Length: 386
Image (cartoon, rainbow, N blue to C red; front, top):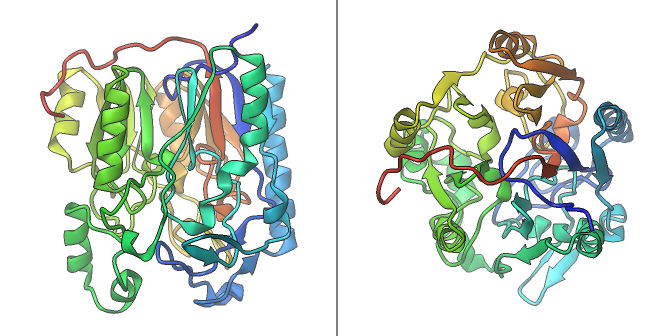
């Protein structure tokens, strides 16, 4: 039987991928883990519901174009299967809480982590994402039948009671703390999550063979990092924490740092890495870290889940590699396209600005299931304890 699942890094030649869908994505109802306030988009704080239909239509058109481009290159593309509960936007609950709607399944990277022949379901900290795993279960069941080596696992499912959150965090964040106080919390890895239970998002990870670099963020807590280091350490894979500066509410590593090929990583010059061991490890192993070109596209959507709107957004860095020298970039980000071209990388411009409001760009909306290659050690020189 053929090998279906094999994905060790972010750059080996791509053979199979899952792509999300915008349908069913909502402005989520308020919850302890996240507040959305979009008054210009008809969703002031406390309001929630679907996006305008024309935004779904544009996102679908652009995602279909992206899928077609990959299929023409011989890449197998599977699409998320949207659960009926997301289509009809019903409330969901556990014995501990009720959430009035769900987030969506546009961004399959967030909740699922492929490492080698294993795909693990993450422990998302948001109640609106607790049931998101159901949208990919039919695909994983198919993989399990086709690939005798495939391992489908799940990290401990969190309860997400009020004990998992800092009380009144967003009130203080929006109304009390100064920018200086917020940045102090960034550097101390202090956000809305407590250390009550293991919490981590898969999109905080950048995979490099035997090493995974993991962002400490508002969706990955210290206990989550500890669990990941224990679990993957038992498999001979090293998980390294890394923090980034100046972003008061960091959410996923792929707008801060991404490896493009062995020896080359691109970082955000405004939200740059501040973990000294991360920078030392890169230098020790002759990895070049270069600042990404500044974004040039200005997003002006009134209804959105991610992005810095009415100003520049570093979602421009959110790219997806088809191979070690072939990278898909949002088509409007011409400066970044030119920068990668000068590095000898084939740039594939992909119009995707209509997808971004639904929570992420090219890296967020893809889950690379099969890449050619094996687990290699790109960081043979290590720092003890890191």
